[in-house]
Length: 119
Image 1 (cartoon, rainbow, N blue to C red):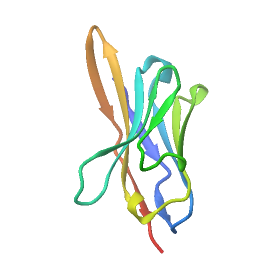
Image 2: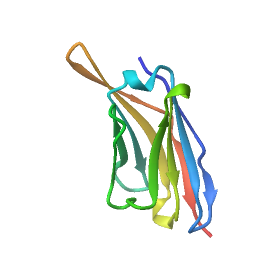
Image 3: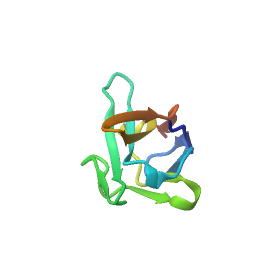
Image 4: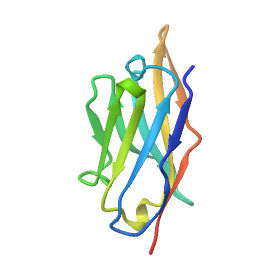
């Protein structure tokens, strides 16, 4: 089991920045993959960033060069630094953890945090 708690969302003007946090209930080194997803109104869920246990992140084309994901192993926390925000980044952002246990993959989700980019 993994509990995930996101924080850091809010209202920001276009061009601004926000940093999202995702605190896990266990060591992030015991989690095979951590990822950030988002769901905008009327749209399907979209993968934003994905970090494997090796620590190397991959990003969606729509956020490359603007978003950066990092991790703090000491605090079991993953971050999503979002810069140069655009109105189209408005969405609920979710933290996700994928854990391989006894040959089966298990998915865990946080409660989501709202990000609104508007002037």
